[in-house]
Amino acid sequence: MDCDSWKAKLDIYLDGELPAEEMRAFDAHVRNCPSCAADALACVQMKRAVQVAGKQFTPSAEFRNRIRRKISSKPQSSFRRAWASTAAVAVILSAGVLTSNYLRSRSAENHVFSEIADLHVETLASSSPVDVISTDRHTVKPWFQGRIPFAFNLPELQNTEFALVGGRMTYLDQTPGAHLIYDIRKHHISVFIFPEQALRAGLGEKSESPKQLTFNMETWGQSSLRFFVIGDTSPADIDNLAKLFKAAATT
Image (cartoon, rainbow, N blue to C red; front, side, top):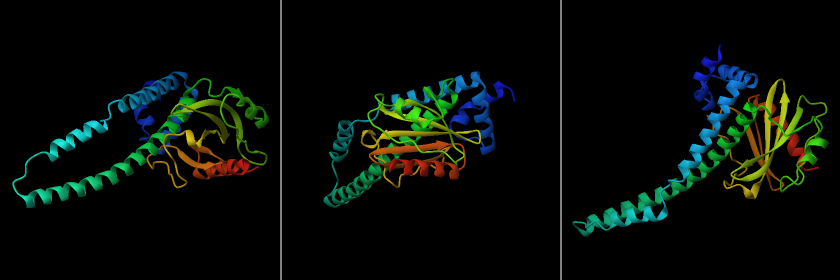
C-alpha cells in the first residue's frame, strides 16, 4: 500500500477506529515512514490544540445561573402548577448536578487517558523518540535528576523479554514527568510517571482506561506518583511490565 492510501486513513487511525489488524499494520508503517510519521504528528498536535481551544468556550457558572433565574421568574397560573413545577425543577436539578459531577469526573479521566495515548503516538511518530538512549537503567534514571521534581526507580529487566530503549521528559496538563520507552517483540511500550497530586484529574485505584482506546493501558498510584503503561502489545505484556514497576517502587 502506498503512502497516499495510508494517509487517507490517518484520521481513522488516530481515532482508533481501524480494525485491529490494520492498526498494527499502520503502527508498523508509521515507525518506518518519515512522511507519514510527520503527518501523524501534525494531526495529533492539531487534535490537542482543538481540545485546548474547546475549553475556552465552556459556559460560565454566572451564565448558567442567569438562565436559571430567567426560567424561575416566569409567572405560573396557579399555586399547584407552581409547586409541581418547582418540585420537578428540583428533581431535575438534583439529577443534573449528580449527572454533571459524574460526567465531569469521567470527562476529566478520559481527557487524561486521551492525552497519554496522544503522547504515546506522538513519540512513535517522532524521529527522535528519546532524549537519553540507553539500555542501562543506571544511566537513564540519573539523567532525570534535576529535570523533574521527583525521583523514581526503574525495574531490573534481567530474565525478562523487555528491553529499555531510553527516556525523555514529557508534560501532562503542564505537569512535568518522565517518559520511558521499552521494547518487547518489536512492540513499543511507553511508561509515563507523574506526581499524583499535580494532576488535575484525580484518578482513583479503580480508574479504567476507555474501552474505545486503541492501545492497552494500565494505570495506578504508588508512592505519591501516578504510573501509566501503554502500548499496542498484549494486555499480559502491559500487566507484566506494570508489575515490574510496582515491585521496583517498593525497593
